[in-house]
Structure formats: C-alpha cells, structure tokens
Image 1 (spheres, rainbow, N blue to C red):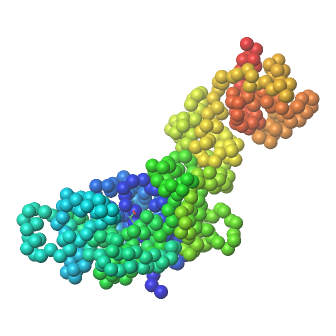
Image 2 (image 1 turned 180 degrees about the horizontal axis):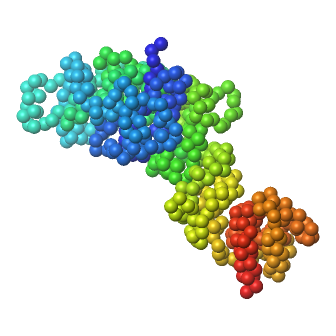
Image 3 (image 1 turned 45 degrees about the vertical axis):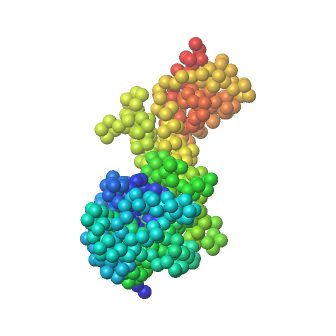
Length: 507
Ligand code: GLU
C-alpha cells in the first residue's frame, strides 16, 4: 500500500477558527488510524489577506490544543520539517509555472483578456436573463492577432482553465458518498491572476501532488472546488487523491458557525474563557463523528481518539456546536486536574482579573499587599474546583476571598426560619470567634470537626452559627462555606473579620 499522507492547509487570513482546528484534528486522527503522515502547509498566496500574525496565531492555537506534536511541515516556531518543503505556498511560486505551461500547451488552459467592466457586463446580462452567473468562454478561442491587439491595448491577461461542457463529473467522497457535478454549470475558472499569482485551486492541486498527499480531508465548504481540482489533476496527468468533506459546524439555530455569529468560533476566545484543550478536543471530535458500536462513552482523550477513529464513522449531516456541551466537558476535565495543576492553570486568570498580584516571584493580596502563599491559593482553588465550568469563573468567586473589608448588609446576617436576629447573630459570632481561637487542627477537616462538636455541645443548630459566620467571613450573599473560608483565612484573619461584623451589627 502506498503511504497514507494527509494535510491541513490553512490560509493565514484570520483567527484560528474551530472549523480549522477540527480539520486538523480529523486529519491527525485519520493519519494515526492509518499509520500515515500529517502535513501542515500554509496557503499564503493571497498576499492581500495573508498575515504572519494570523499564521502565528494558527500555529500557537494548534500547539495549545496539542495538535503540533511530531508533525511534518510548518512547526510551531514557524520553522519547517520534512522532505517535501518548502511548506509555505509563497515559497513555492516558481514551481507552478511548468505545470501551467503544460496546461497552456495542451490547450487545457488559455489566456483571457476580458477586463472587469466586460466581465461585469456579462454577469449583468446573465442576471437579467435569470441565468446563474458564470464565465461564458468568450476568450476561449482567441486568434494570435486578437491576443496581440489586446496586448497592445496594455491589457494583462489571466489564465483560465477550459472546463469541458458536456460532462457530469462524479467522484466518491469518503464521507458523503457519490458526488456529481454537471460541468456545464461551471465557467472556465481563473488559475493564474493577471499579476502572475496562482489561485487556490491550481496551487493546492500542485502542492498536494508534490507532497504525495493521498487523502484530502477538509470542510464541506470546499465541495464546490473539488470538481475543478479533479479536472486539473486529470489535465496534468496526475494521480487524484481521495476526498472526504466534513460536515459544517452549525450554531444551535442551525446557522453556519462563524466568528460573526459566535465568539466561540475562535479557539483563542475559548482559551481566554478558560476552556481546557482536552475539553475542546473531546467536543470537536464529536462534532461530526462518533465511535459507533452503540457505545455511550462521552469522554475521549486525544490518545483514545487516535486509537478509535475511523473516517467511515464521520457524519455528513451538519454538526451542531452547543456551548453548554462544551461546558459539560470542561467541568469534567477541570475536576480531573490535581489541585496543583488547576492552580497553575488558574493563576494567569487570577492575575489578569487583579484577584491576586505578582511581586517578583511572590504572589500578593492586592488589598493588603501581604504575601499570599501558593498553598493559600491552592486551598482557594481546591474549594472551587467542583463549582466552576471554566477557569475564568474562578475570578468572580475569588474576589471576596482576599478582601479584608466587606460592605455588610444587616439583613444578610439574619434568617427568619433559623430564628437569627441581629442580637442573636452578634452573640453567636462572639461565641464562635472564641471557638475558632481554640481550634488546634486548622485543616478543613479539623476545623469542621471542632465546629460541629462545639456547636452540638453548646446546644446550637449548625445553621444558627454557620449562616451569620459565612456572611461575616465573605460579605457575599452567595459564596463558599464558612469552614472553607476559615481554612483559607486562618485564625487571626477569620477572627478579625468576625469582630468587624460584630462591630457593624452593633452600630
Ligand atoms: N487554504 C484552504 C483553506 O484554508 C485549504 C483548503 C483545502 O484543504 O484544500 O480553506
């Protein structure tokens, strides 16, 4: 069997779109399942729209997702690896000429001198006649004299490919089955612009051929290009790769997912919200694929996917992206982290939100400027691990934790059902402050055991004590529990806060 080689060929013209990332993922999974190679090539021939910044974005994004390991072609740092380079189209421009010469010689391609105005007029006439717009082939058979006249006028020609009129082109798509295209509906398409630059279809075909690409797996939006590319392969006498077109990613209202319709289309936006790469990979794999066999398994690591993936299980129906499902996966992968790992992941978010600050290699409480031990931050993160669905959520929760002063509201200390009044709250806070000062073991369990035992011993109900205590320590209507807060704050700060609350209630 010939070596299986697939590629992803992004155009660096914008952000790393989820569709692009999923194309990379499916290609990598297919390559792995076939013991094949995955190549990353950059299609940067559109010089007005391509930017280095976008290329770097795409590379960094794919790397963050874990999709740049051991690949051929462009590497994360922009360097190249592999025997089929260069892997940037702009560095391959001189290669295309020989192929185009061949097409011109055989008559499969020709010079077209029509200018914008003439083409617009042709289009307007077709529209007026209710016909779909397409190039009608006016310059298909120019004589040498006619060409010379146009040249003398200073017109710069494009090169068009001569599309056969009476043919239905059919190919078998790995995902969508048989696809047919009536070629009479396709006009002769431009392969070389008037400035000599190759366009996507020709460059893509030549590069895929020169890089020995055996299978082209890409988005459904490229289905209209495939017949044109097959015609080019045929005209050049080159072997045609197999094609597989993945379903589009849709929003929940079934509109096409785009950066304009949702921020979530941008992988870096997802990163900024604190979605984990594992969650995004898991979710993307299930956008248009499932393992079959009646399995109900939902969570798949990249390594598991590499074992299980079969292209035949890719669906052709549109794949709906639902951010709630991504939240579900993310919650799962957040829970899987050790507290240390999760803390490391959360720290950039805490710093960015100003919840904590950094002073050389120390973290500081931005309100008090006191040093914050990493263990304190870990305790905070540990208590919130099961309460967040994305890393950024932690910044909302943490804001009150490091705040030494709170703007209390009397009614939030009270609870009619538990019989807590202003007077009783003051009393119980005073009492519990004494209990806290005597706790020996300041671990979560130690604090809990002492409090529960003392509360019981004194004949109180848990709520009577913990309700006002939690509010005294957090100043928030909704927050983590009192015991967690005591563990984070330690004895002195907890007692200090309780005293402030008592003073507030006494005024
Ligand atoms: N440069 C094209 C794109 O980004 C590649 C399409 C293909 O895979 O053939 O859509």
